[in-house]
Picture 1 (tube, rainbow, N blue to C red):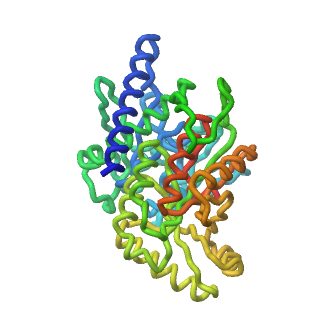
Picture 2: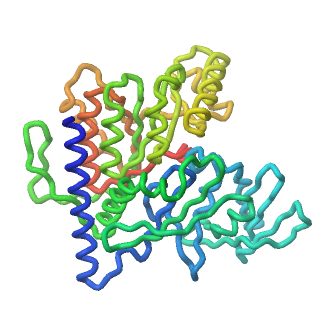
Picture 3: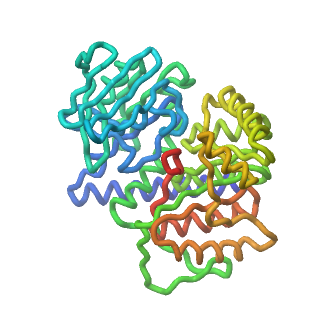
Length: 397
């Protein structure tokens, strides 16, 4: 009950911050929603950021090309693969097993299908800030995917909404927008905070929160932070997802391969809210680990129509062998796992380690009550000090 009350209060506070941001934008004559376009892949909302958002160029919606590839989009299966970028010919290729092969000439933006004697196709590509984007609707049409363009409304403001989906999606557009509305609202609130360069006011120091220098301002946007949660205790997994949702952050959730069936509800919720899924194995040999992971993959496909190549092996030798087989091994980095210390002591130690990082940090917690207390303090610090919190997608490795 207390967790629900905290969540409701945070959501109301988020809505107030968003309303104030919109009001400030209107008062200054600026259109804050001009560049915001929400994106969903099947039943998964894509976290709102400048690097992952679609863009509107001359009335055509373009999306980062990697959203079509399950190995780069968080495991959403569209049956499309990234054939890679040829830097000599300056081309990018997307293909499927039909076979269809879409090769974009990045100098001209024109695409061709070399399975059809190089016949020119409708999809086009552009490059913005070093990122390759492909036209959304025509690329979907070419590969037989469904494409939706509509709007999501928050109060008096309306935002474009793009959805790329296929038969693996369980929700209609209306059902998805209804389910994802709160998540998108929270993400929008945090996006506005970053755009306006304003964080929430720091709470008064208490004996459970390390104090900072009065009047000091911290800007750590140059430090990328990736969060991972080992879901092995079943104590506070739901509450941790609540906290992540309120703050608009994504995380990697690592599930023991032999517990996937027992964690089906949490897995479905995590996938639906845009988090990454990974597996853990304590197997002592490559063969045993592969068998365990393959069985877990089958269960993930059945439970949430997803898959993963991210794994956290307990045995370093098994980790090396799995990496050689194409698995992506998570390195725990800065650990906040309970070791008998209090949440305050763990958080203080974690904060000191984090402040020593200049470029990036991987932080690993578990789903225990102690880690939940650490994470609530940590998420507040990440917002206040403007860390660049990113979802650990497979291209991170």
